[in-house]
Length: 329
Image (cartoon, rainbow, N blue to C red; front, side, top):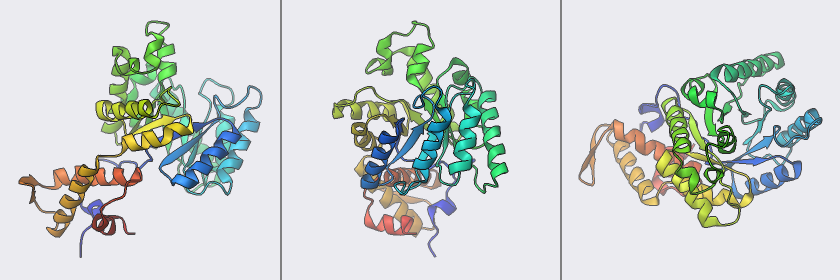
């Protein structure tokens, strides 16, 4: 009997979340439904985050949250990959957001996103309230939590936030981060190429990515402001992945989704190599092997297994035998 890599290889202190490569934000109902239609066409290669923070009109917070419940529970949500962003902890309606969303759609929500936390204590308090509501509803599942790192305090405590129980993604909020520097960082750092060059911004990106990956959490890169030029969008996503280690990225326009997905995909030559190595390793009962004149063992198998999973999650076509052996179920 062949042993599956998930049963043999070290997965870290906790399983690494298998999230789509794109987190698409929509604030208006029309845009949420448009995104769901595109998701039906492309498959679950991107998540949708329904925005109850910036998307809600002042004074209509409850109405907006109830609308999001309807979208999440609707027939158009084919894949169950729709989450919601609530208000920040200083806003008077954040608890109401959670109560409406969890009671109304807790069984179908993919995740809850927490914006503008100022510390690990802020994130922990909101997660505690989320769990309290889930328990009161008799929910059998604990919703995953995504946390935006966009304040000085959150950046300082990024490692502690990433280690909180239930967190599966750390997201960099570039615009609020730059704005929080009172003009010390120029506006050019909110777009490319400045966002990849200014030392204070690159420091933040690096620390968030390192904290996330060390704690078994997905680092999610901020949105690019380019909406039309596909080459620029893809280049930004490639820099986020190759230079800073981000495995996921926000989008705010449908034009951005496919270029980001493509940029987050591994090179096909790497996928082919990974498939060959893992097939040979499985045939050798996961003992050491030679491939292309190089020695491989379980330490490198782990890398290639995660690479194959990332290829699958970004919609790549896998070599047939690898697909049959490792993803047939």
